[in-house]
Every structure is written in C-alpha cells, then in structure tokens.
Image (tube, rainbow, N blue to C red; front, side, top):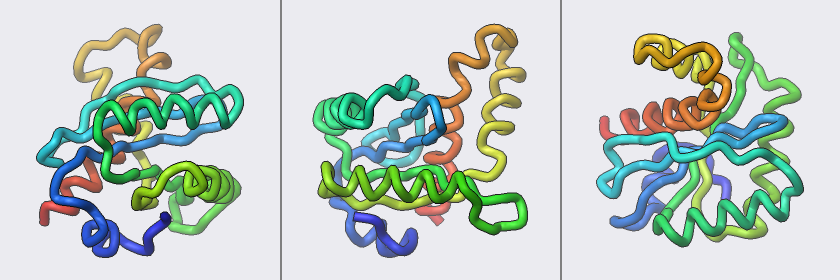
Length: 153
C-alpha cells in the first residue's frame, strides 16, 4: 500500500526485514536491497521489462527469498520539484504492485540518482561500455540509500 511519507512508512515496517529499492524506467527496473539492519543499500539486479506479469513474478521471488518488508520506489520529479509524465508512469506501476503485494510502498525523490550512480561508477573505474548494464541497479541503490540515511536521522 502506498504511504504518504517516510514517517508512515517507518511506522508500518516490522522490526525485521530488508527493504527493496526500485528504479522504474521505460525499459528496465533497477533493483537494490538493504541489509537486514537497514543501514546500507546494495545493487542487486536489473530486470529487463517484458510483461508486467513476468516482472512482478521476478519481484515476488526476490521479496520472498530476501524477506522484504517494504518497497522504496524512485519518484522522478522534475528538477523544479514538479511532477511530469514519468511520475504518472511510476504511479501506475505502484497501483499495479499494490494488487500483488501487501507491503508498504514509499515514493522517494530520485532526482540526480542516475548521475550520482554514473559518478560512482566512474570513480570506481567502471569502463563506459559496462556502465549501461549497471546504471539502473546502482541508481536503485542510490535511491534506497538516500531513504535509509533519512530514516536513520
């Protein structure tokens, strides 16, 4: 269920359980997971979008296997803070997820997550040819880590 803010999200989370971060794009879904203590996010995988039913089955497998307690989904606000077409696409994705999962879902501002992910890969020495394969899952980790840091304050 989509929650209004981080306080409501935190209140609905059980004591135990990892969080899953998603970077929802037009062709892929970047996936990241927190550790059990919810202190650090790590990139997991990139799902190449096919049909929603196949994508949701992959997410169900991750949620079950990793004992996920909640979703943090990147919300692509415009740089001025306004909502655009990409926000509508994410909201439609969330509505579809809510049918399949009984977990709290938080939308998290993802502005600059892709550029931060790219900067991290450049700093780590990842060659340009390999960056495109990793960008979405690393962006998901950037989104999730930002929320985790805010949650810890």
